[in-house]
Image (cartoon, rainbow, N blue to C red; front, side, top):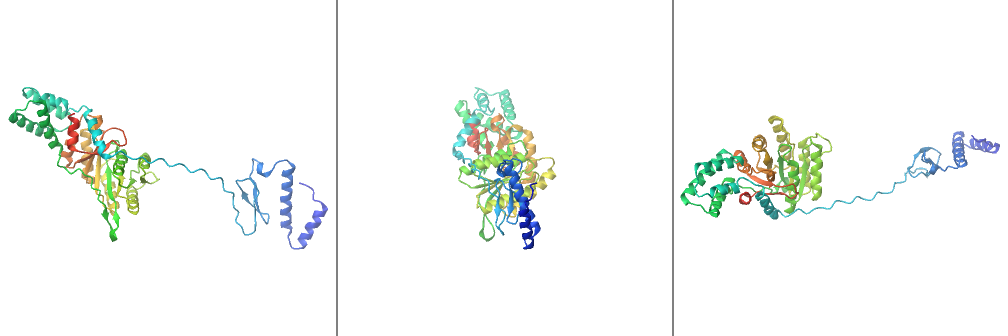
Length: 411
């Protein structure tokens, strides 16, 4: 420590005698010595890597370091303000995509169906165009239809009608046979079923406009979350405003995936940052956000667990009850994987019993030749296929149309 000159001791005594206080004088002296030592060592406080500069108040108290590395002296009564770091440039928002028009999708989906090699197509026409149809030929037709997952009941119905019409009309020309088969298949698929999505806004207290609420259910692995994202694109393409609800809180990846889908088309996703959070709470928040934002539709993605019927019933039942406090769901869409065949029907029955399914979304139809699942699932559940997905593209989801579907599988 530097030696204290006698003149400074005398000055200190005078300061004590005048009421300044010995402690205050010693603090001031200590600060001066520290600065002298640092200057003598050739190191400036702002350049020392091992410590930041210290803020010194006007009475000499140390109050902490600053990021700027400079000594900041505050006047009495001022807060110790730290120098703000330079602002980072704002991240650029991703460009919002405009989904493909829905009308154009039907043509593309029909073309893909035609290339899927369904046994409901060329092979049936080949048999029916033979000069004479024997019992073996009819057995071959039955086998092809069963392999296509149409089911025993619908297969028998279709063949009985075809037998009668071929015998009575004496049809042999390929074009005429094709038309007969088309008419029977369209009737079997159900051209008169209501396949529209009921998305009319509701009305709350005091005439408050409420969004249409759509719950999407199904086991994991069927493409459920992806389907919700694609359905959002369908609605955006129809100029509807949408809010997504990530109520599948048991898979963190599901919420991330849904958020990404929404961001691509400028749609907000309501989610919980806590894995395993209450799905009903997320659904409620999503519907509330849709109401407050005056959105047209709220799409809620639910958990796809199917450990037992009781647990599923409790969870989905709670989601419906809680969401209904704001707006009653107008659609419950069940997502089914067309490649699962009979297994998919078993899953469908459980969800239909529990959730009150109003429509079916059939995915991955391009990955199978079993297009007959459309017929069977409608017969089993008594609800129509409303949407069909073909391919991995973001816009490969379209409203289902019986005539287009049959034209596609007949090539």
